[in-house]
Image 1 (cartoon, helix red, strand yellow):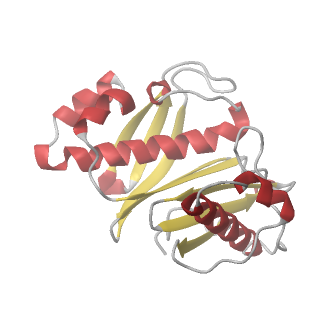
Image 2 (cartoon, helix red, strand yellow):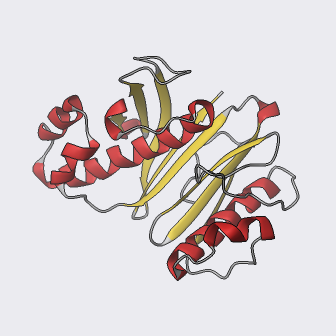
Length: 216
């Protein structure tokens, strides 16, 4: 599994290729993709299927995970989780609040370099300075890793803040040799305060970048 070792053992992880065949959705979930393009439908179905498989790993039966008005998954009571997909693969994680987990976040990306011009949109000033100090041939891939870490941190904090914000609200410090990263808030986003830090894991695995984070 791509996410092996990213999370503690009591957090359940499920993965699948987007090319796999998936079961039908629950009626409560169907409305989320009514009229959506075929690819979006496939991504949504794959995500919900992986999420249910992750919940099965916690000993839970299959249950619907509808989409809220904010487009975030509505997990069953007592459960927290996160879903992500790249263009070719999908993954989901789930945990019980009773195990001390408040929130989870994951991100999955193909390990392909982003256009460095996108750094203006994705990175804070300090992140751009750090990128400029790296070897030119790897900057685009490191930019993808920064993007992935920020997506992961955003998903993890959202169940607690319910706040939508831009990439400049969080500064990422990558520690790729340790397969870890830190996300530091650059502004107050309740319940988080400026300079609050969230620790996550990030790794390059078989052509993908995987990132994971939990808040206890």
